[in-house]
Image (cartoon, rainbow, N blue to C red):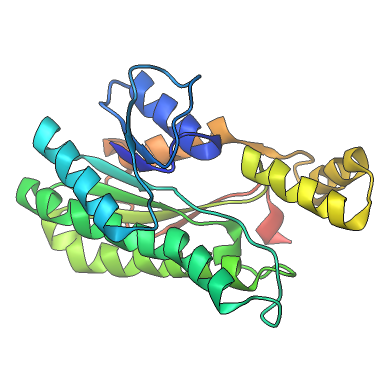
Length: 242
């Protein structure tokens, strides 16, 4: 299993879940997590640079002889309206969130086709389904991942390759905390109050946990999900049903 952006947050939880289930796991990330299980392999990789992604995946396939699952998880958050999103901002968000996913997908497909088997999972967002305020570029990037899951599923079903998008809602991760901290710094709001308000927005009454997203990710990679492809799998505590 190859995981992009697997050092922290959801990516870290996914790596730990797959290693616990007996997979060999390779984490492609620009920096390592020193607390991560030593059984998880790490290759330094800037996922926004396509050549680095393809080289890292080629190296992994050469070492292991196969690739059963790609979890395209690497991503960054950016809050702004379309007017406040510069061309540089847009390129930065799409470079990692979308171009990185394209590069990783292209790199694993030849091996998966030769195996006549494989699973590609894109870490999208509830924002693949709905809009949120001040989220032009991020929202667009996650909708793009949902589209990639559907088109890849159709194009490669004949090779027994499945592709799905996972659409988490508000999950308590470093990405979430960084976004809240930026908001608090800009607005002067009370941090505890903001966290409580975020939890209250979820019908289930709390934030999601990275381990819960990892459990869904593993299920979608497993044979128990072998008839699921081209789908958007929502895990958001009921948020998008409102």
